[in-house]
Structures are given as structure tokens and as C-alpha cells.
Image 1 (tube, helix red, strand yellow):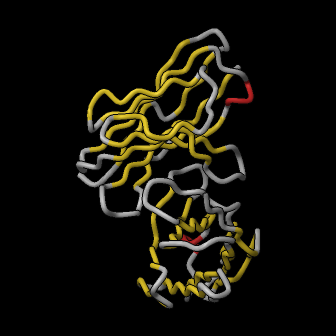
Image 2: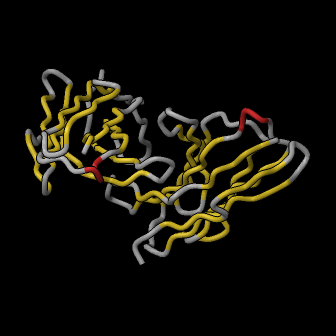
Length: 110
Length: 112
């Protein structure tokens, strides 16, 4: 099964700045998903990008996918305090099962 | 109704107790999941139910016993747990043909 590796493990930025986190994986995928988890809470699905897509936007989120490099990035623009959370990527070869990477812990400083 | 609910929110139990975690969704999703998450770690898949049948068991110890009594409910029965089983237990659901999973808020379990 797939597992992503996020980089960096932790990221601390000032409010209003952009945050970029990366995900690498090892084998071919059908899609790649990004999830957010606020401290001690459930995960929230943010965005899904399919293997035939290169870029996708949702509000302040921009996700890219480079299947030749087996990597994806998540960009959060104009960060807010509420964006403080852990972010997990989940590369997927099919619908049934997701394996999450270690995550990036993002802290937005006021 | 577009949410997954989990009860209880917090549970403290002794190693000899029997307790159950409950998960409910009314979105018509036919795939339901149990995950275990330790502090500062990603969620780890435990079980997957598809159309009320167990389809994936990730070699979970038998002291964890899942049950899917109907398409809206998922239970996790706990018996003779160990302190290292203390964790956040997350339930999720997914609709057929789509990949996104919807997560509940979790049950914080402490085993004494």
C-alpha cells in the first residue's frame, strides 16, 4: 500500500505568509489526497488530485502533482491562525484504503 | 446530515473492563473505517467494513472486536486492553465510487 512522506515535519510562519508542504511517494497512484487535523480532532478532507491532473485549487489551497517525480505539494496562501494544524497526504492506488504519512505540523504565529 | 458522530468523546477504562465505541453516519456511505492514532503520529488503519462486511483487518489484536450492525452504525468492542492501547480512535466513512473519507471527531481512550 501507498504511504506518503511529508516534508518538512514542522513549519512555523507568520500570519499572512504562504505555507508550502511537500509529499513524496514511491509507487504509481490513482489519486492523492490532503487532509487537515486540528489538535486532537478528526481529520478533514481538503482536496483530492487525480493522477492525470497537474494542479488543483480550492479557495486558498493550491495542490500540485508531479507523477514523474512522485511528489505533490500543498500551498496555503495568506495563512491565518486557524490554519494551525497537522497536514497529511495520502497517496492512493485505489479507493478502499488510505495510508497517511507522518504529517507536517504547521504553526501560524500572530 | 453530513457528519460522522462518535461516542463517547472520552473513555477511561481499566484493563479488565469491557467497553464499546460507537460511530454513526447517515450519509448513506457503505464503507466505514476504524483508525487508531497515537500522539504526534498519523492515523493507522485498523478495520474496513464494506457493505456491512469486514473487508480489511490490519492484523489487529483480538482484544479489539469490530461490529457493523447496519449500514449506519459501526462499533468497536474493547476487552482486556493494555495501557499502550491508549490513543485517539477515529471512525471514517466513504461513499462508493468516491475516494474522500469523512472522519468523526474521535474517542480519546485511556487504559489504566
